Image 1: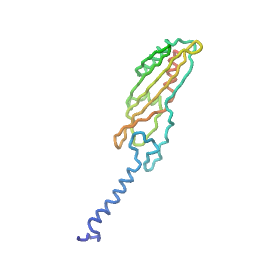
Image 2: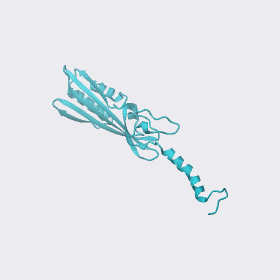
Image 3: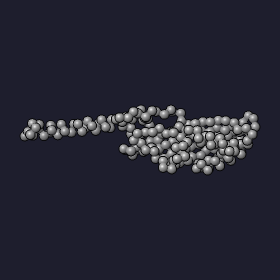
Image 4: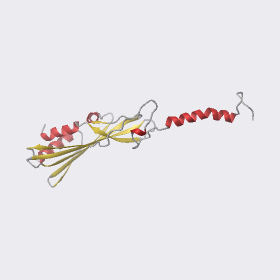
Length: 189
């Protein structure tokens, strides 16, 4: 084999030139978050600290008594509020107890109400695509005249990875705005 001008044989020259490229590729993809439920601590980007992991319990439950109200009146007001807020409420009755459930979907562009109602962790290289909000309102007769009401809210954000296009979802922390609005509606306000 003939020597190149620098004194290296061609295969050695090619390996010498390609080795740094292979090393850079390996370093650039090491630890990149690929979606799914890997969580924030598994993501590592040069020059940035990992996003702090959000608390695990993100479903908000609020329970309180509403004195002097009938369960039917509270149910109608809660259903009306959920309908106005873009949910599709459904009531299930059993033994004098009611569960009113509702779901609302919103794209990230039209997700302004969801952004005001919940806090979702920011993820590097992830773009929010859609929000889903699920509400359960449990109504039961209170020991005194009135209604016992429990509220559960769960907000989920669907994110798209900007590099791979893979989708992942995360449960967000409620700000209490939706729960407060449901309490006002139950009281007739």
